[in-house]
Image 1: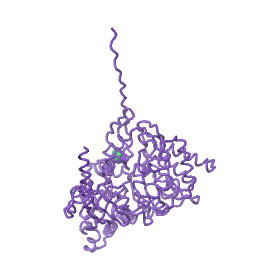
Image 2: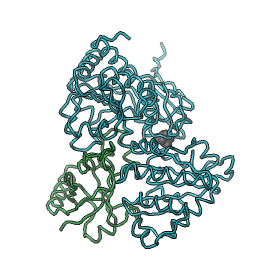
Image 3: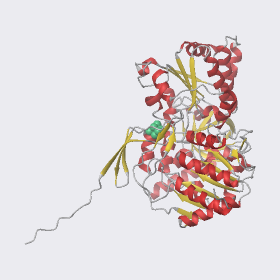
Image 4: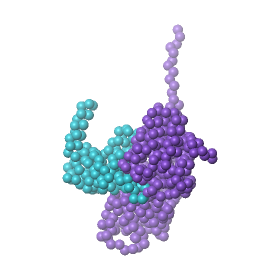
Length: 445
Length: 131
Ligand code: SF4
């Protein structure tokens, strides 16, 4: 009698990718160990809650790689249609890029240059005002490694890393035991200044709740105290919502610190005052260097938004909101930034790369975007891909594709992809579109 | 009667996870459609979680459901909502020459919607039956 057949089961192999890079937020943690089974990440060791959601939810899907007017189409058809849209436009806008690798960002800038269009990034609606302030005041800065090794007074202003950059405290700013702060958290004082007592405030030694929209006044109060100028206590309280004595105590700590750091967030840039707020903070940082070492750093949101600033700056000389219509780059926030060109109904076509303006822009900007032909590249189905004339479903950077990203402190970090995707990455899609754009325009370069 | 508040749209951790899960999935949708109010203001206005309110800014008007802000997180007079469709509708397209719309610290008036409260209970009842 023959033995019964043994049911053979193919057990997918477990692949480990060590030191993978998380690109969900600007912390760009590059110490994540991924366990990959059957083209699916099943574990992301050391990732925070946001990083885990990022790695575990980017799975292979069976959506088509390209949709034209909502119907499945071949990639070739998609590239052709995209190139026609961009070359037919009189005022084309290319926007997004903060979740694409630098290599793809570079191609996007080239396309904007060929078509005489605008290149803008999501920086314009996050730290764009900080970019303007850097140009006006300059930036006294350092790497996150220096913060980890030296920072003894860490001040977060209008930033809530506990919810937006969950490993910020443990990896860079509060917990690390560094060369000059050997006892880690015990050697540091953490101050949080915000209008809400956010989840981050729990980590603070001192929480200063300021009046909404009073950041500018509060920062100038500190600038005055740094210079030893006497202030009217009543006026300070009514301007900032905080007693003068609290600001005096903070200034005493700032002067006594060996290495002070401001991390600032969109509580400054998105609130009335915008670049004037960040200018005040950067100027205060500069002032403090007459007393001790002090630096400031924006807490950047998306994984490669810092790369977008760098790449657009290398290619055009400006960080965002750059118009090529005259054949050379011009920079003017408010005029060439995407939300303005849409809200004013100027743009007549667009390419939205790794961003979701349909979920983030003002109603007037969204309504205009819905009325013009545009191309969208995203790893997920979003309100922006749904209304696009051509939507590319792309591979996820850092999970399916390699390349380089910049951490929020401008340190370049390589990506270590975990598994292949059947979809092309941003780089492939943009390179194919660029080739067609050049053909249509008769450019041989 | 309408009340004035300052609205602070912002990021929440659940919203961040919801972005990776998918923007049409419940986690993200729930986050961007829940308006947080301080427990003190909820008591003062005699409203409870799940009640509907109308928020009006100089740009637009939306109807949204209330949730209580975690204890101490939000001072009275401030409202919080995760960035998304609702906050966009209240935000002006004007960036004052900066490229950045004023996305935080938006002046709004708030009205409690009696009819919406009735609607919600009707919806809740029918969902409960369907379950
Ligand atoms: S802190 Fe940011 S980069 Fe690091 S694991 Fe979390 S989401 Fe990823």
